Length: 259
Image 1 (tube, rainbow, N blue to C red):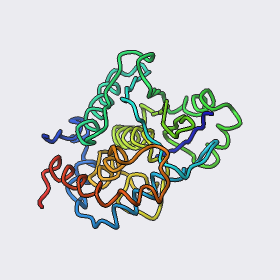
Image 2 (cartoon, rainbow, N blue to C red; image 1 turned 180 degrees about the horizontal axis):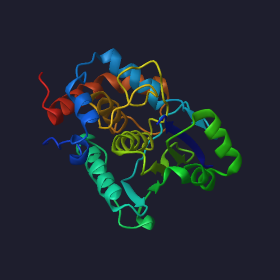
Image 3 (cartoon, rainbow, N blue to C red; image 1 turned 135 degrees about the vertical axis):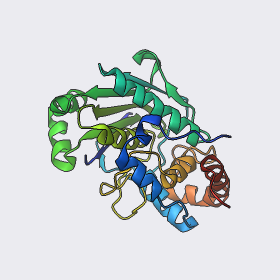
Image 4 (cartoon, one colour; image 1 turned 30 degrees about the vertical axis):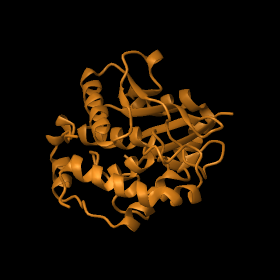
């Protein structure tokens, strides 16, 4: 049985942030003031709140870990070559910062398990209806009023099999990068937004535009091989101390953080 979850945004060596995003003043300012030191409890709280549950779910249980257990290949469908190039840099940035995640661009939709649909803002609602049907599209608009959207299908083992991401291309560079990072990352599993964790982009009151250190912790926890699709909260809590030790070492290394 397939189930879907949906989320939306309200509007080695370290890989540098996607080059185009570094030129955007609003993103550069956020990077300069970013909080980078967190306690174990702060990281674990955010992980449990985003990896379980769903901001808006269409069907099925949401009390288990959901993630890809296969390589992730991303295809960009749209006419804006500049946005496609930016998306490719974002995917490469994510690949360089999540240790056990195999993610890259695909050349065709047939080779991809993540489809990113690049649309004009005026076509967003119609595109959502194409993906989810008119009734569910109305529910999504009423509940989320999105500027961008992501969702995934999982199998009975809670393994994600396919994700869809819808991004608008004409709302400015900051909105594009902010939406692209959030929706791509949520399409990998941490689909639940939370208003109680102030450091994560999976908070509708927080806008980043880049892959921040806190969310690198969350994605690295999720994609550690010891955290498996289908695990319950108790299953995850049993392995998190050891996993977090290794994740801390990786995030420190890739971001050149002090011990």
